[in-house]
Each structure stands twice: as C-alpha cells, then as structure tokens.
Length: 183
Image 1 (spheres, helix red, strand yellow):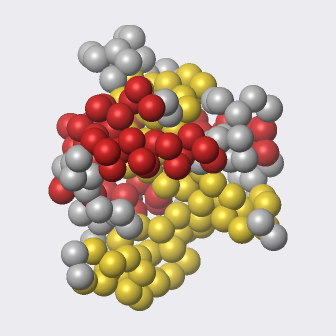
Image 2: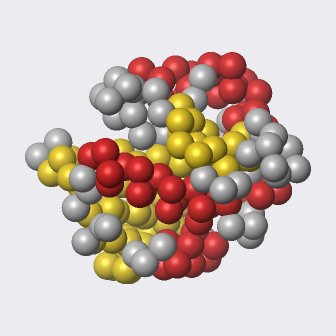
C-alpha cells in the first residue's frame, strides 16, 4: 500500500498531511476551546505546528492512517479547507490489529456531522486495508461531544481511567471506549 492516503466520502476528503498545511492546522490548533480536553496543548506559534506535521509525516511509511487531514469537498461551502484531523494508529506492536482512534475538529465545524462521517470513512478504509479487530478511543469525561460521537459510532464505554490527561497542571479522567467485530 502507498504510504500517502486519500479517501473520499460524500462531504469530506481524508488525506495525508503536508507541511504546506501548517497555516490551516495552526488556525484551529491555537484555539483553547478546541484543545481544552485533548492530551496536547494549543499551538502557541506556527513552529509548533510545523514540528507536529514533521513528526506525523515521518510516521506515514509505517502507519499511513495515523493522522489525516479532514477537508471539505467542493460541494461544501469552503473547498480544500482543512477543518480537522483524524487518525487510526496501531495501539501495540504485539497486537497489530488493535487501533486507537483520535480526532480533532475546528470549533466552527462542531455539530455538523463531519467528525462522524470522517470516523466512519476512516474505519471502513482501514479495516478493508489492514483488517482491524478492535478500535480503542479515549476522551476526557467532561468532553460530552466526543463521547457522544464515540457512542454514535457504536463504541462501548469500557471504563474510566483516573488522572489520564494532564492539562494546565490538573489531571483529567478519561473514558475508555472500544469497538470490536468491525465490519
């Protein structure tokens, strides 16, 4: 399989990230509301975004679906606009068919079904190409939108991980979700 990925659905395209994407990624990554419950801090400058992109791009030859741009298709209001990222990454080398799902969406795009569409599209593509047995996802217990999305995807809440995310000097608890028997 080619290490660069492009997947199209009705309203969005998922594709491998490029260094040239840094301004669009920085646009939502600098927003404190977007990163409030994530395990990474907001980007303070474009250099942080470029460093992040370099790390992701270096992983593509091993994990082509580890983190992909979510772009609006031309039929939507802003074509070629990156509205977030989503990825499926193998969780453990000893369990090669177990993946972790992660996603982030710019605040202007919340509540419009794009994250759900992106997740369904990516799960289907990855399962077809890599045969997934289990998907895990974590989200802060306060992140209502994310855990509702995970449940809409058919994921089951497995439990709570105490003090899982360190954010601004405080620990946040996370829910652990899983999806098995992926079709």
